[in-house]
Structures are given as structure tokens and as C-alpha cells.
Length: 282
Image (cartoon, rainbow, N blue to C red; front, side):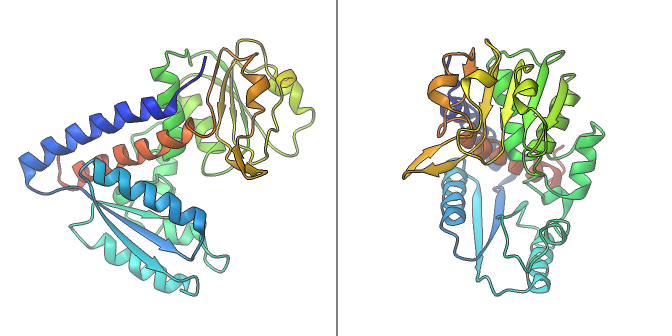
């Protein structure tokens, strides 16, 4: 069965729009998201445009600050701090990756944790680790929402995460652990990856390697979530050999149209959470 992330994301986006409409009617102040885009990466520009469009559809204002890749870390942090102090801005997002001469962590940790819509601030990561309330990273949050909305049983399930990035792999593992799953994280140094993935009731793949997971690496009936986005021969594909794994899995996300739309939907949800905190509505 195909897990249609686009369809599910639209349900969430419509819900967000309805909530935002009510909030604006009551408070007369719309939520506002500030996005900082550094450099000329075409992929980053596309991601930002998609976020801007989604915000507009949800009645969320956006402010995009574009800087060239020569900006210093100190200058970038100064911009972040000015947005922290701006009461009209409820959420802040720094589009990653940043140029190599800038420390990502230093910039992200300069964001007010209550405006950190990406959920990457050290305080929000710590809250997630301790199962406390905090802003959750958008992609792992989207994955968890997809699983729940598709009725997948998480508690007690054996989950294998392929990839240990700070953006997807690690937080996804922690969030699923918080949902009482039994979680294994694998990486490029894992010996006999196949033996690990074959144990998974839920297999989450975020390795950044095209078609890494083949049908013989998937337990029959497993739920497969493909987070990868790769370009091969001018076509987009995931980290999973979709055509063949689909025949083995009980549920699987396509690429594109799976996790990607859910990331943006989760970002909208996080922006509303930030707005409500700043407006003392939660």
C-alpha cells in the first residue's frame, strides 16, 4: 500500500489554515515566519519558495532575508538576534546547509528556542531527548504523523533507522523511542546492514544513497519510510529501490510525494505553536 504523504499533508495544511484563520480573527495579528537564506544553492532556493507558498496558503506571513555566501558567522548571528527581538516575528528558520566557514550549531543556538520552528536548537533537542514538550524537528515529526495517521502500531514495534544525521536519523530514533518502539540506529559503519534491516517492522531510511535498500533487505510486511532524495539520470529517487521493495512492504512512501510534503506541513504546525507561545495562548 502506498503512503500518500501529499494527501496527508494537505489534511494537516487545511487544519492549520483553519486554526490560523481563527487566531487572526481573535487576535488581529497573523503568525509570521522569518526565513534566512544564505548563498545561491538552487535546491535551497526551491525549498524556501515551497515554504513561502505553503505559509501563504495557510495565511502565515513570511519574511525572507537573503544574504550572499560571503556573510560572516558574526553578521549572521546578529541578524538572528534582531529577529529574536522583533515581536512581529513568531518563528525563525535558517535554511541549511550554510557555507562551510559558518558554524551551523552556533547560528541555530542563537535563535530564541521559542521561535525555533525547525526544532534544531540545543534546548529543543534536549527537551525531545527527555520526552518533554518542545518544538520537534519537522521531518521526523512528519514521519511520526504519517505513521500515526496511517494507523501503524508503533509501541512495541521493532524500528530500524538507516542514517544517523542530526536532522533526521537521530531525532527520528528518539521520537520513536519516546513512543515505546524498540529502536536500532544504523550507519555507514554498520556491519551486515541487511541483517539489521530484515528485523524491522518499521524501516526508516535516511542515508542519502540512492536505492541503497533493496527488496531482499526488507522483511515481508514491513512499513518502509523513504526519506532520501537523490537525482539519478535526471530523475528523482529515494534511498529505497521503490519498484521492488513495494512488492515486499505492507506500506511504503514514494519519492517524491512521501515524507517531503509532511516536512512542510510540520513546519506550519511548528510556526503556529511558536505563535501561540509568543502570544501567550498556550
